[in-house]
Amino acid sequence: MRMMDTARSDKLFERAREVIPGGVNSPVRAFASVGRHPLFVERAEGARVWDVDGNAFIDYIGSWGPSILGHASPVALEGIGEQALKGTTYGLPTELEIQMAEQIVEAFPGMDMVRMVNSGTEATMSAIRLARGFTGREMVVKFEGCYHGHADQLLVKSGSGALTLGIPTSAGVPGESTRNTLVGSYNDLQGLEELFRNNGGRIAAVIMEPVPGNMGVVAPREGFLMGVRSLCDRHGSLLIFDEVISGFRLAYGGAQTVYGIRPDITCLGKIIGGGLPVGAYGGRREIMSRVAPAGDVYQAGTLSGNPLAMRMGLQVLRHLAKHPEFYRELEEKARFLEEGFGANLRRCGVEAAVNRVGTMVCQFFAKGPVETYRQVMESDTKRYAAYFNRMLEQGILMPPSQFEALFLSGAHEERMLEMTVSAHGKAMETLAEL
Image (tube, rainbow, N blue to C red; front, side, top):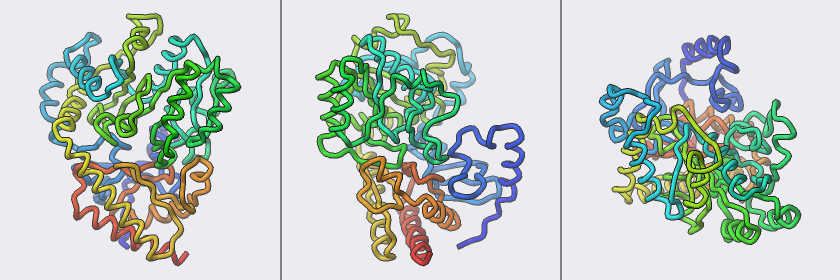
């Protein structure tokens, strides 16, 4: 293990706490659950980040998903300076927005139209408003542990940073805002059937991550996604897939192409911006035609379809479309980590479960299998904190939360993966002694 100098990061954090709530602009960045101050980044390239103290790390955060080609990817950055010189925002439409919409629609078989927004939260919030407008109903079902952004109506038993901080709901959310939000259990089809039985004529939509990545990675049980689709069809409700994480990561057309399920509305973000702020929601023409100005469901955004984000995102998506082998190679990397981590756990006798769905990987310090929110919440977060710090000391930057997926990129080389598995083994050896 190495001693790290974090003096400059520590000073910046103290300075930040004077002018930024908690010193960070998104809660999980605070590193609170792993018992240390956050690292402040100086630069990033490929699969590495360097902090302001000069420490270099193999990065498995990847900006929480967007950097699928790696940091500062030449593909994403090509011509961005030229684009910026043309102006960074206009408040008027551009051809880039059309090209992006065409690219997304081509990737998702069940999508006819798409509206660009600025974040995943905007996408899910707008999708729910659209579902309510289209169905004339008010109730929405979400699953506990799944995070769909910080809109009031969705901050009920949420995942991601909310779980990390131990606040799956939030102060400041009026009861009236969540009165029409029903909560089911992921992978519990019988429980969802009961919700529909009691409220079926009033449920506008079910919103879900087809593969949850915000309570760690949890795989759908066989038949679960198709069962949700069937229940929505039977009761006249819409199915909304939140593919902000899984879209263009599990496959070019997201989890829905992997599992053969067509939702009515899909929410996207992260990768489609190539590293700049972005979001989108899209679906069947008859549904999307209700969005203003074509229809009566209002939604707007000054910076939606920002030309820089459209340019960067398009370059990434076009690259992925031209290189289908990319996903096979990325999944092989994920499998290498899964198998290496599993072997280390067995050798050291550490009780933990490694979950992997395609290119999404997570290690829970819990007795496996981990398939439900209840099982996720049985994880030993103190042990995860010890694991995180032991990996960090060896130059490996894992997500600073038990409840997040690690994110691989095309820039993670074989040698880096081998170093990661080796570091993991040493971390498990020390944890076995605790």
